[in-house]
Length: 139
Image 1 (cartoon, rainbow, N blue to C red):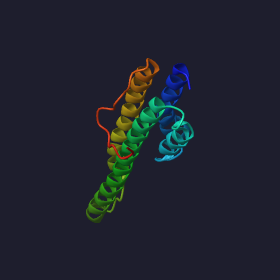
Image 2: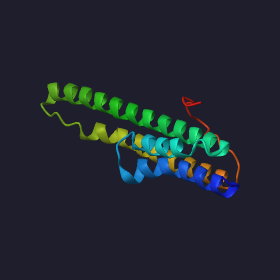
Image 3: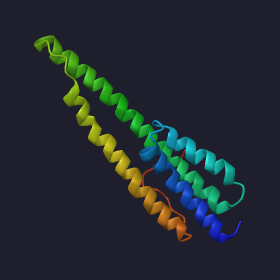
Image 4: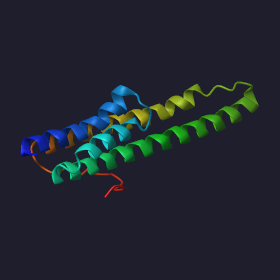
């Protein structure tokens, strides 16, 4: 694989995760699946693509784990709030508590977009990119 193709595939790997996470709405793990499939297809063709694919996959796993945690914590706190206020007032409304967690989920989407674009720009120049906070599960 020539250098231009390497950079193109590495860029696609970094963009694929954010594309699936924000625009395709494949659930909280669709971004992992898309990056994983692309990485598995091209990882043996180039060391650069392999390295960047692992980095993109690790970041998307981190984002998905954080998203799942936000959803679980938001659901639990909404339920506790509804139960607590419902017992005393008779109104089991969880709407405002659920919305308070929505901004954190939106912030995760924004982080994913910003850092994936930064990574895509870097690898398109031929530079390696490491996400600043990321679980390194795939080595």
